[in-house]
Amino acid sequence: MEAEKRALARNLRELREAHGLSLAGLADRTGVAKATLYKIEAQRTNPTLDTLISLSEALSVSVGELLSSTGPTPVEVVRHGTGKQVPDSDVGAVLINSVMVGSTLIEIYELSIPRGGSEISISHGVGARDHVIVRSGRVRAGPMESEVELGPGDYATFLSDTIHRWEPLGGKPAKIWIVHTFPRPLTVAD
Image 1 (spheres, rainbow, N blue to C red):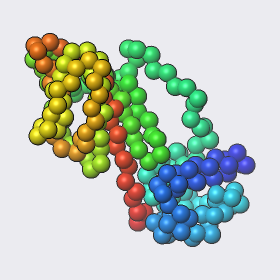
Image 2: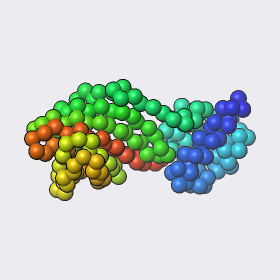
Image 3: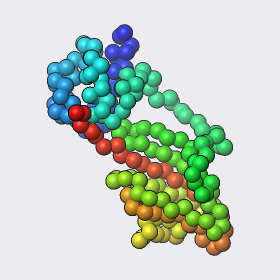
Image 4: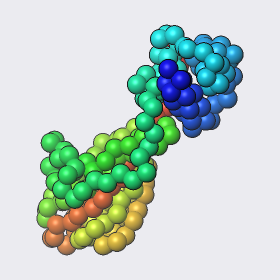
């Protein structure tokens, strides 16, 4: 039971700090007493299931993530060709990895865009950002009203909260890596 208390205390403190919240701020968002939050972080109490649910909702994580005793691995490897094919993509889209960093979801994709093709994407939500690295070919990329041309090795970043696209240029295919970042907003538990 002590290991579980340590994991919960560590996770709660890290998530609270990642959201920029004091104990009082988290208490206001959850309705959980500040003294109870202090005791959880000090490993001096066992919270109720209702408390855990309130905390997980306010910190935008599952109860399982809040209780997880496994920390980040020192090195995570995704071998070439082992990503997940995106089934509804008209281009060869592969999800390489999806991870949480603090309160931000990060997804890493490889797109293989055939000659004459393009990928048009709707808004990913307020605050979402795309980071694009061209691996081969040339592309026009970015929000529809402010696209830029990129070549091999070029990098661009833009807010992806509006319609945006990636389109190969010069009648040749292109391969790009995209890193999507999605800030997870804090929610207030009912």
